[in-house]
Length: 317
Image 1 (cartoon, rainbow, N blue to C red):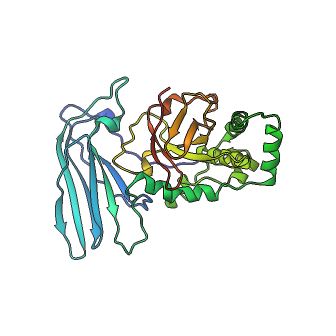
Image 2: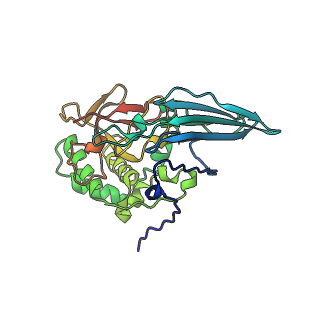
Image 3: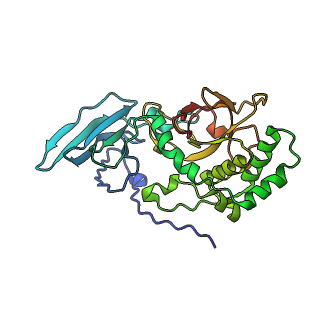
């Protein structure tokens, strides 16, 4: 049996708010952030008199903010015996009411992302470019592309009648797409949510989430000598900001598959170093081969291909 459990405590007084009401709260957050990056939203649906975010850190550390949809704000600094506290304060912020077909919230609201830089002696990393993220994450995916004898046997059985590369890619893509979607997220405090299960395990158990299904397809295609690159994307309505390299901007994983130049599809891109790639979502069981879910079209994605990877534009079909 597979079960999902969750616990949450919330305070929601929005139904009790009257005109001229003022609601104040303060929160102290402690976590093991794997990205060394922390976003903060200054603006929401209700008018805000004052919004403050503060960071306190020891000597040798530093905080670098990146502001979105607003002018930069200078911090208020206070020094302690062993630490520094920086506070960014924004006042008199109007509320906004989401409208049908309006841009995503992060495209119109005021918010900031804070990059946390550790001392040089620390092992904690802050990636400053999309290529750096690709170089760091690609080995993890490659090491978990494990091919079993059972996988080889199945691939040869399914592709015995294939007459060209396209037939092979289509057949194996549909196999990965047929795997049951089940997400089992473990070791989240150390990046487990961004780490796929080994492809041979996904093949054996016949279930997996988006990154598992993509990794399985990578293993299946590898048997036939065809390259696949994991493509990290956001499924839904949001904007990806190119000037803030961060894996936390994404929530989904699909495939960028090496494809023959003769294949004609709106779901392909011409990559300057990797050649022609077909973008395929193994998770979307209702999206046919050669197409893309609407929720991904026109956005951006991060190809994991070592030093050849980076941010790309996803076509709008």
